[in-house]
Image 1 (cartoon, rainbow, N blue to C red):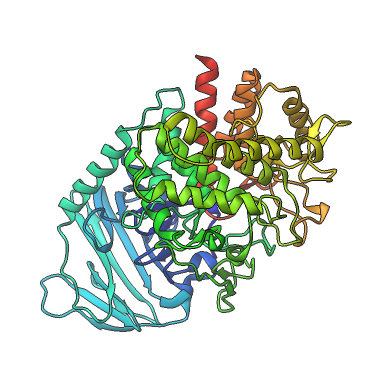
Image 2: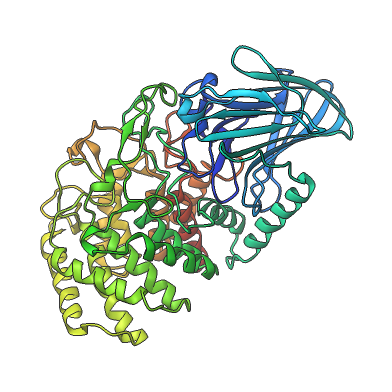
Length: 591
């Protein structure tokens, strides 16, 4: 059975990622990309669905873990009655390969270690053919099935009931390495790597990247770790930014809100880009813009809300019936049906992010502004269309206020591109449309009696996404209408001091009701508090939210306050980028 979500740590090579449990078991791994089929999927089922355990044989052993500095090299120190060992888990960065290293180092005494390897390709549907590696000094095995192959090198493993196990002793000063490499099965087995060099180079790369962070506030450590998460979720070769490293971790145990987040949402990627830009990472902005130009090239009417890591458009959603789901929460899904939705807000997020890139000094190229003009031409004709909104509701389309505000933001940034940056375009027409959209919002999405913006035109409900209005400049954080909206959100959506996205019983999203507070929304409230003069409230809520971060600084999508557990896919880009924005707002308010 899988551990609690907060019991997992991430390791990554900026192409894919693995989740390592407190018990020493890697329960989730997809190679060579984040969205590849899994080879370890115990996270969504049981041990026989694939895992790699490396831990002391002593069941009473205790452990502490941390990353080595500002890296994704995970150090787990195990203490037993007979001694102490350290296990270093990392995915070497920059070698163009799909490697995973587990290094065991003896600290004191002697510790008896156990290793249990169960390779299951294709989301636990394929048992590989395994043979011993020949012709090398170090022991190894090769596992092959279909297009996938893995070579393992390290302590000798023996076959036992469709798994491979080993036991070995580690004494003071010993270093024992276990090294796994995925490769296409039609190619030759790749050679072993220099693990000492790979460790040093991987640590140096992550630490150099983190050192560029411009944030200098009291929450710098949390900000840097969150930025590192965002970098880890960015595919190095394509520039695509996935929303999370996992699929189908439920928003509620036993519920059906289990989605695949291993794709690039234009919205989440745009917001991530803004955060990276504001902290000194212009190169990532250029890479993401190049990804965007490739992904959405063509007819603007064909723009999707999400894509694969290389810009793939065909992401059909289907269920994997062979996996029972995280703690029995089914279905397990691959692909995402939201790919076919119309969400007008995403064009706004893209335009806001690209304007931020211009402001940061990223120059337009021959394709980028013409692409933006094409997006605006599409929006001119379609901005009144109802949509599925930021939360990707599966009920009927509506005129969501957040979507309408992002349409306003799109026209606003297009206008500013002309006025502030000297770009060409129909300035008067876009200014007129910007004003028309604002008038529509103020007259049809604002409840005068309650002094609050509402979830959608004609609605009597509020939505936490309304907290984004000041973030994109639609109104000031201290605008009386915004303060009234905050009061309504606090009254309707605050549960145990945290925010729900919206009241699911309102039958908006076409799904069974019930979910836990959404962490990004509460971070948005921190930002709102800080920017509207409620600094004490901002600090109090921020401190509470930081209490939900796990021992290595990671956050998932939601939090189960009653049972004290993270919920939803992990680590969640939106949660971490919202944390960074909230920390920035607190720092600015206190300066």
